[in-house]
Image 1 (cartoon, rainbow, N blue to C red):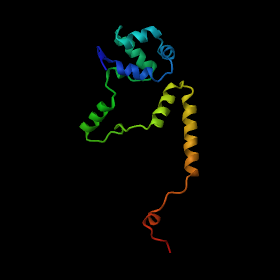
Image 2: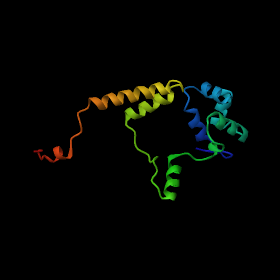
Image 3: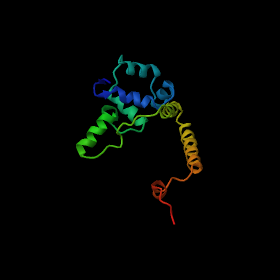
Image 4: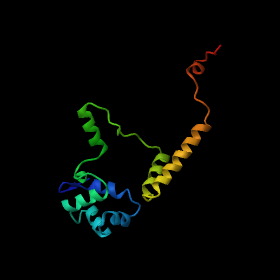
Length: 144
């Protein structure tokens, strides 16, 4: 995605995606929804003062909107440091992608509820599964 000055628009898109509606995002950063639309469409430039205000409102460090936060950039830094990145892209199943979409469209207040419900379901399903086979059972050797 393109940059405007040094502000990376994909980072603004990333912050915007954390809110279900643009007017919620606008209220959170104390800007007009039309102003956000203009920024995202490239009609209006994001000034450095506005960028710092957005970062502060969203709990990001100063300069966050200026930097590349893509997985490729993160992996390149990890490779340069000689470490394996935890952000290596893994393909999502259709169900995982759907859960992600639901999470992104929840309000900030609803997200903890969704996470708690997901954790409870996962924990209950682990309890109802039969125990994992042991190495002995896999080899076909019976215990004495």
